Every structure is written in structure tokens, then in C-alpha cells.
Length: 106
Image 1: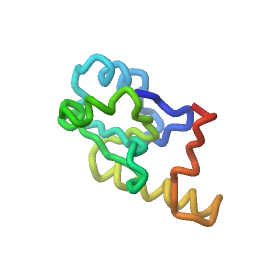
Image 2: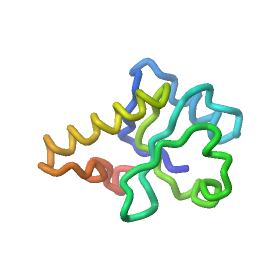
Image 3: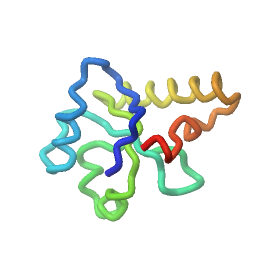
């Protein structure tokens, strides 16, 4: 997985390095959700739980997925998507929050 340099977090005190370690070692994420840019052009993002990271279709994409957010709980993940959308509207006058995460900032 690629972790974008500008991560959105549901809690600023979150230990992102610990979450990364758990993801990279398949050690379970304890209720955390990853928000990743979708590899499909027609979708903007995927919200992935620990269980979803184990599915075959995700495993195939895992190395190329870009993580743009980490949230504790699904509700917080959805709220982060909303925050990203608001930020994109403020900065670019567009709801496409993918604009916030240019590849050159990886």
C-alpha cells in the first residue's frame, strides 16, 4: 500500500505508524478503517475494514492502493469522506476530493 503524505485522520492523536504496521503485517486493525483512492475511474474511494483487506479482489489491488485517510469506526470514515469533499469544494470548487491528493505528493 502507498500511504499518501497528506493523510486525513479521524483523531489527531492516532498512532498512524501503529496502524500501518498492523496493515502491513495482516495483524488486524482493531476497528480502524482505511480510506483509499479507488483504482477504478468511476469510483472516488474505497472504505476498507480489516475483513475487506483479506478479500481476494482487494489483495490483488493492495500494493497499488493509495491510503488517504484512517478512521476509527465506519461512521468516522464516512465523516472523513465528507470533510475531504468539503475541502475540495473550498479549494477547487469541485466535489472531487481526489484533487486533494496529487501523485507528486506521495
